[in-house]
Amino acid sequence: MVVTKAHRQSNGQIGLWLGFMVSIILFAGVWLLVADHGPDDVPAIDAELADAAAKSVSDGATAVWKGVAGFGGAAAIVGLTLALTVVAAWFAGWRTSLWLPAAVGAAYVINTLLKNAISRPRPDAAWGIEADGFGFPSANATLAVTLYILFAVMAARSQRLHPALKLVIAAAAVLASAATSWSRLYFGVHYATDIAAGIAVGAAVAFAAAAFSRKRT
Image (cartoon, rainbow, N blue to C red):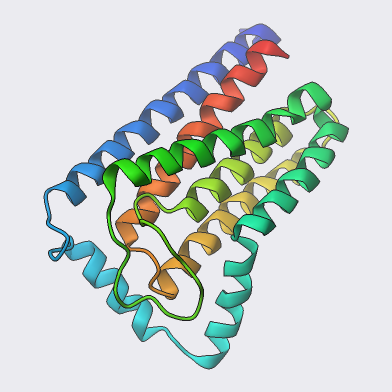
């Protein structure tokens, strides 16, 4: 059977919206888990992963994760968003690349609204890096996942990039998102469920933006 370009695009759209729905379900599940516990009674998985992160602390690891955490900060995300938008303009065109800053901006607004609505305090054991405001969902995880995953999807669609390079970009996007997320857990500025929720929100925004950008470009 011959698979046409239109058929592949249709399957791609279905996959993106499926990813969006799975991300929303994941967020809802994490939120329900957190809501089932009071502010002084965190879920067992939060306590266990916080303990694992504390046991992994060393001088060398702290230096590495402090650097990673810096790349997940607001200023770094803005700079990376602008840089990746320029790169995406080269292989995907300006109209498509502008969805990157639009999606990151939307993710920031959504994250802020959710944080203020849920009002979950951060862990008391935070150290090493500055963090303020409410913790759920993690803004750093949300913005990193939105930026890197959407960029990887744009790269995967491009006709200008070699398939091997697309795989490298996809792997780098996953690793960068994971590293940013772990750095927040390492320094105790978020619970694991804060980070999971942030990943879910970021993925939902990235998948939605990818679906809409394909439809309109």
